[in-house]
Length: 380
Image 1 (tube, helix red, strand yellow):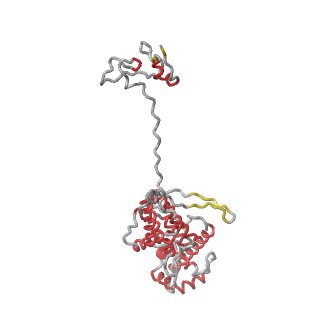
Image 2: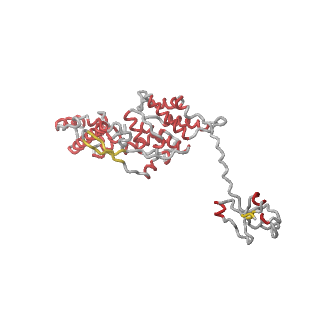
Image 3: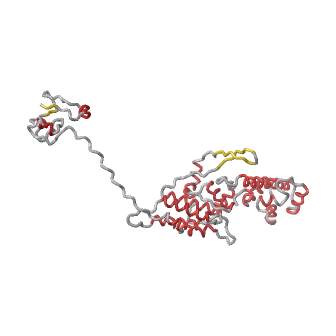
């Protein structure tokens, strides 16, 4: 479990912080008290006043030689355990359906679990791009605590560094609890980019680390699932088809978890110590509903864009003949020299003796008038 009242590491830390001796800790362990939740029900009833005589009998049976100061520390720890337990039960009742309203894993619990995860997967450096965010760890632990699978998209599997650098204010949610309005904070997982195959693979690996951290699935089983998923991307497609895309992998991953949730695969470890999710990942990937999402798709032939319309021909005829005054010919148009600019005249008008210039070489039609009235010429 991941809450404060169910963490054995947090219990030992709190016993040390309130000043209990090693002998008292050993006495707690001998009587099977290793969490705050067990201590809360060991003496008295949570939510009701604790009689002094009942507490004295409890301490006398547990640690007969306890001094007055140590008795006070035990009473303080007992009151704290009952208060935390009541608060934990109240949150489970008032916020049962809030997807990301998870209780954070205690610091000491998170450190111990992460050390155990790193030791169980040698050869994998759980740092940098493979270190999951605390929000991802909390979301995975909630699945184990409730015993129900929830789909965590790769976009929500951020890194710890990204979580530190992109701290967002939590949104406020107004709810009605026991006939009274209450304002609570809604926690959400920040989204990261998964547009490329490398980013998607790293996000899935971080989810595998979080699942083993929470005890929902083993990292090796999830890694085997990732390799089979990406194997579809490396296969040579048939002629006229394109390779499996990253978008298809994302769709298939969502379908895999949807199928496991529909099949009611439990999130808790079984009595034999195996994870049901480990045995369900690959069969779900090989099901028809998921395989159809990974089939190579027909390649779309890129249509050639139509050629842009040709611009209006410039008012220059490079194929003018010498001696034709209407075509800009005459003296001075030798080879190697650029022909003088002459406005073009339609052949029909030219045969009738039409000209585009006056005898003093002035245009009869300007550029603007030629656009509006392209057939304005003078025939002589």
